[in-house]
Length: 209
Length: 371
Image (cartoon, rainbow over all chains, first blue to last red; front, side, top):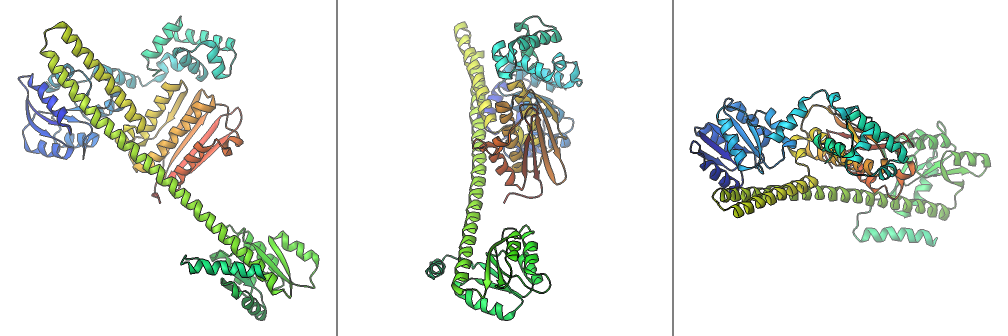
């Protein structure tokens, strides 16, 4: 497995090499410090897969990925990034990358990704998979909280962030009994029975943050 | 007499200081060449730029191309008379507030005087005019003209200064965000790799626990770095463009406030980064206002890209902004949005009605670059 790596930070390249050294089947055949260099290198040396940083000086990100896919359509490019998955993840995969890994993910994850990609597969982390899944459920009406009215939604959010009925009433300019009625209705619509379950629901569906 | 001399001297002084004071233009309109000549002679000592017209038509033509400090207008002229000339001149945007002094024969009635004031006269002098009175009055208007010019200039300077500050702040934010995110972030990444390397070689349980907790600390530092950098300048904006950034910001807003956002976005595309940044910052300011004042439960956001402009429409269902809030002292945020848009020849319109929410519409032309 001949691997190209590109990252503008020596410390990251160093760490990458160190980690890849643990895999006897992997050899780093070239290192680049920016996008243009990476592209040039890819034309010069023989390689099987590339691990590129998403943000580098010069051509980088989706543009560089696009160039790579155009020139070397069959060969996998694994994107390494400082950015969290919800920002760029799905776009990078749609852009043709074989995988997307954030730099703070565990090194074991990187090893897994390299192996998977080397075998012709795609690597998607658990959290990115979740994001992709939620993007795929193209019919948003299916989610129970989409059935809430705008006002119910806001009451739900306030409850989920730990606000008391009286605080919610004040914040929204409603009477406490109205808020209580909303609460009952929300729990019924979401099929829940307690505030704790509601908090759990909101966290699971990433409605609070 | 003294007044006139003083005004006159003041300008002479300014000129002698080397400050390039452009002469103020004064338009004299009279169908009698003799009267015109007399007026010119009389006012020449003011040292201003005197222009003459012998008919209403000619005066109108000149008023189209020049900004006059004051107009001296004879009431009785063949063709378009003085009143009609004044009315036409004042009906044009450029000259709608040009001061007009009517000159009329003493025999004219008081009624004609009222007519003069109706069409925008600031003064009314009987012929034959008393030279000193006329000179002094004209000098006052010249001075007034200069003052408003200076005011306009200083407004312009303030606006340019504000623009400069906005762009400096934006640059600085982007720079700091990049430094923090790239440098600090990468060092943390490297550090984590090193710690992991170390951890693999450890056999001692307490030592492995230590490296585990070090990794956890590094992870949370990376999160913090990300949060700070994104707060300063969302990487989305530079990497993916305005459309993606607006979508992302709306989602974040909904998560952070529980106020539902409905989005209508065009296909993702990247265009001029400065215009994108401007639009994005205005959008953030709008959302901040919604969260702070609107008591809304829903925001409808529509972004549209046309050939020549980018449009943003944000409507909430909150309490609705009051007219007094639009102009009040606390409306600096609104002023800031307006200024940002204006920099690119754009415009921000805010309308609200009590109980029916607030609508903010922003348009920025794509063709015109910042001044």
